[in-house]
Length: 427
Image (cartoon, rainbow, N blue to C red; front, side):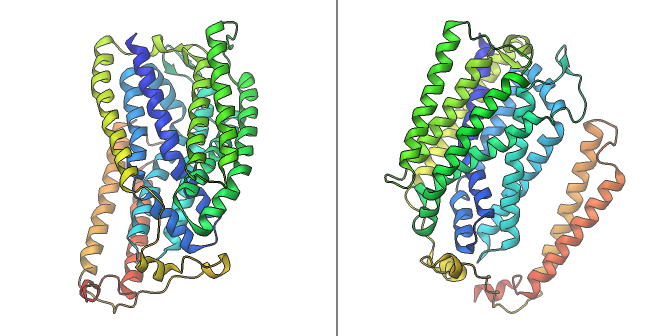
């Protein structure tokens, strides 16, 4: 029975990631459609406090899957390798954009665009992976036997759009809970249309799953039917609570209800498909690792999950309440009580005089980072295949030169703005 404990750990980690990283992915996507630089900066600062802990759950889910259900790991990873790599690259870029935007004195539209686009790409790739797994990946004996683009199906595209809508809904609910002023009212207005979109997507995806999934759902079993019905009923009730809560106080109610919708939807999916993990016939028992690995997983990963959850709770407690812009940040980005037209202003340039002290050190550091990235790509090529399909020496050279040129150009622009003059900053 330990394999079902591993399965439960994977589901718990995926559910926690869906909820926690889902709302900040949704906030990132919403920032693409916001015309106010002040609100975009506010969105970034809202999630800069806990985005790294939120993304820890996907690492725990991957480790639990690798150690507890290696048959699923070996089947799914080769089948969805391309969208999974793109998702991971988007998450890396998104993290860099969050931190660099947070450290900037004003709003940097370039990093804001990276933040929004990488959030959208990560959401879509997650939906493509989920849709590919739910619709079945060709495998035999625990080995993937399909092609490079078998993950790209009509159902996986629908899943990508549906998951993006779920993230947008969670983002709007979180913004209502944490913001004031125009951002708060805007989130309340967006909530109900997004909730209708998610409800329609859920119905379409469920009807499409019966056509895309090669396994037959066994609703002739009373326990399965009862659990599925209860989960669907809970999702409907939570959706109704979220509908009533958007635009009304208390502001925490829509996010709590959206969390209930996501948890109920995941439980309904498990009730309909378990014990099959990868359709049509890869079950939990067939994909499980030996008993010793299961026990190690339960102690190791299971012991880490309460620690990460405690960190999430601690971060929520420290940053509880409404977000307010610091005075210096408000002055550099724009006043907090302006209209959308007044808030759409460019950042004021830094007034420091250009300096030449730290610039050389920064350029050298960027060169070393580029060389390190090229070395990692080269080593990864040798370790993970031996055949240069996507990355070859020419590709590594082009990547290195391009990255180095972009970073040096960025350094020159920053130096001309005086951002490298530490003595001026101290004065």
